[in-house]
Amino acid sequence: MSTITTAATARLEARISTDLHAMLKRAAEIQGRTMTDFVVSAVQDAASAPSNRSMSFACRASIKSALRARCWRRRLQRQP
Image (cartoon, rainbow, N blue to C red; front, top):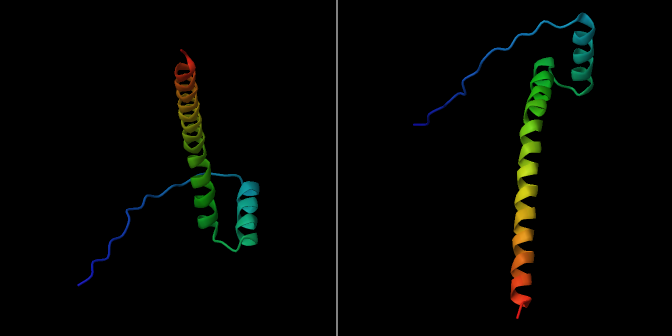
């Protein structure tokens, strides 16, 4: 017997201008998507961008630290 699980959902509502509504509707149509799918995708992308940037900074800091440690190890090995 198989069990089907469904993800919990929440509703989001926003008041927007008629111009913005028309712009979003047109953009969704151009991409062949529903307006809901288009907006949810755009919001997900916008929400994940800051976390991607901070992860990138963390990775760069980690790489710098590793390179610095490697450089010091080489210097110490060269000393008589």
